[in-house]
Amino acid sequence: MTELKAFLFDVDGTLADTERDGHRVAFNRAFKDAGLDWEWSPELYGELLAVTGGKERTRYYLDKFNTDFQRPENLDDFIKGLHAAKTEHYTQMLAEGAIPLRPGVARLINEAREAGLRLAVATTTTPANVEALLSHALAPDAMSWFEVIAAGDVVPAKKPAPDIYHYAMQAMGLTPADCIAFEDSRNGILSSQGAGLKTIITVNGYTADDDFSGAAIVLDQMGEPDAPFRVLAGDAGKASYLDLALIRRLHGSD
Ligand code: XBP
Ligand code: MG
Image (cartoon, rainbow, N blue to C red; front, side, top):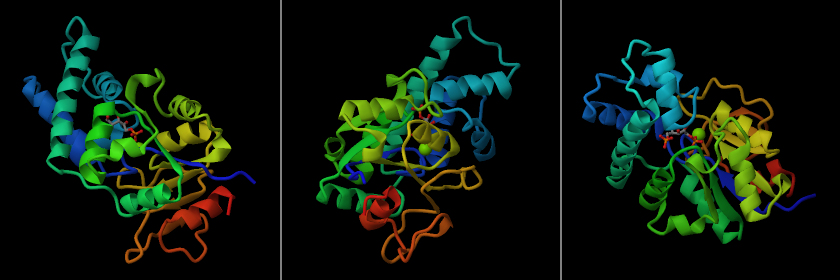
């Protein structure tokens, strides 16, 4: 039996519901600033989420949904500029408190810290976005609670590739058996499982119908003592919210 030593967290969709009312809105604001008439509706954005990474997603939009757009000579730089503006809007929104953490997230992170577990982030989003979320929605010094923030372009191949999880574990000197991952999407679990990690899923509006085969458990949310989760797949025993005891059981180290 291996001892559980670390939690590896995805960010978007897992720690907070950032996509529909955060990233999507920030993209639209950046498009408007640039004089573009592009408008990503919640439905279209659901389709665009097939591709992780904001720059990659924008290119996918042009390739698949806006093929008539007259592309500038240097498309890469054009997309980079749009994406930088989007990050400005997004971090500003978070600084204004636009997006709270999902239920149970702060409670679980605090419990893990008290128990001496090591924490890391493994995400495709831009590092500035992680800092904005953690410091405004969790605690002003929350960045320092995480040993490694593996984010954005630090690995060339984003999720569903396993690289970002490999990167985080290597930086911590840990093996997959030492850790458990928290994800919300098909691309996320492909990445974490591809890196050999047991994975706990909390779904959201965009991912409720995703295929989570092989997940340790699939929940609608982490839940709180007074607000139970719903188990969508797997066995939570008598537990009604996700805590360290249940996670150790799912990890196989209780
Ligand atoms: C979510 C993503 C990100 C965000 C946008 O990844 O795919 O691309 O939607 O962020 P995860 P950027 O769930 O792994 O955190 O625009 O900064 O890429
Ligand atoms: Mg996610």
